[in-house]
Length: 375
Image 1 (tube, helix red, strand yellow):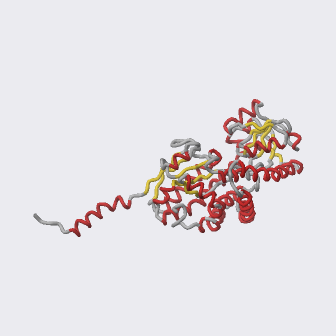
Image 2 (cartoon, rainbow, N blue to C red):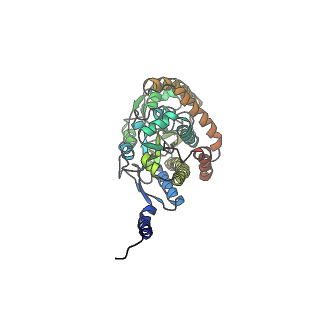
Image 3 (cartoon, one colour):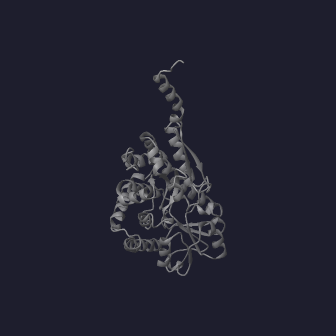
C-alpha cells in the first residue's frame, strides 16, 4: 500500500477547511419597526455599509416590522444572540439602564436633534463608565443613539400661552411630558402614538404631543387645526445598533472597524429620516390649511421655566429612583457635549456626509476597535 506523506495530508486538510474559514459571517439584524420607518432605514444603511466595506465577509439578514421580536422582546433577543444586532428602547428597561432614564429626562435640553444624537453617543461611548457597565451587564455593545425631531403640540384650538393649556388633556409620551403637562395645569394622558388620531378626533385628548411628521404618518393632519411649534424635546433613549457582545468579539478587528465606520452613517441617516418626516408633515399642514404657529414669547418663557425646574427634579429622582450616585456629573457632561456639537452641526442639517464626518472624527475614530466591547 502506498503511503501518503503527512505534509500532503495536512495540505489537503487545509484546502478542505478553507471554504468554511473564508465563509462570510451571516448575521441577523432586528428592528421591530416597519421597513420605511426612520430607524429601519438607518439600520439598513448601517448594515449595507458594513457589507460593502468588508467585501461581503460580514453579511446581514435584516428583519423588520417585528418579524423576529417585539419592541420589549428585543433586549432578550440580542442578549441571547437570537439576533446579532438590534434596536433597543432603553425606557422599556429602567432597572437595566438607569443612566439612559436619566438622559431621557434631559430630552428638552437642546433642540437640535443632530447635536443631541452626537452628544449622547459620545457621552455613552467615551465618557460614561457606568453606561458601559450597563451595556456589558446585558451582554451588549453600544454603537450610538439617534434623536427624533422635537415634539410639538397638535390641537383643534389655538395655544398662545400656558393659560390656554390649563385643564386640557395632553397626550404624553412618558414621565417628562407628564411633568410638563402638570406644570401648565393640564391633565397627562398616556396615549400610544398609534391611537393619537382617534383620541384627538373623539376629544379623549385636547393636545397630541408628537413630532410634526405625525401630521402625515399618524393622520393628525385630518383632525388638528393648529400645530404649535414649541420644542418639547425629542425621543433620545434608544440605540438602533446594539450588538450582541459575543458576536462582536467574534468579529475581526478590521470587521469591528468597519462597524465603527458604518455606525455614523446609520445614525445620521436615522436622524435625517426623522427630519424629512417633519418636512412631509408640514407639507400636509400647508395642503390642509392647518395653522403652523410659532410659540409666543410667553409660551417659550414658560417652557424655559419648566426645564430649569425639572432639572432639579431630575437630579434628585436619579439618586432616589435610579440609584445613580452622581447624576449631576452625567448631566453636566451631556450639556457640555451638546454645547460642543451645536456649532459643529450648524448649517449641516442638509449635508449628510458632513455630519457623518463629524460623528466619525469626534467619536468613532477615537474608539479602539481591538478593545472596545471586548474587555
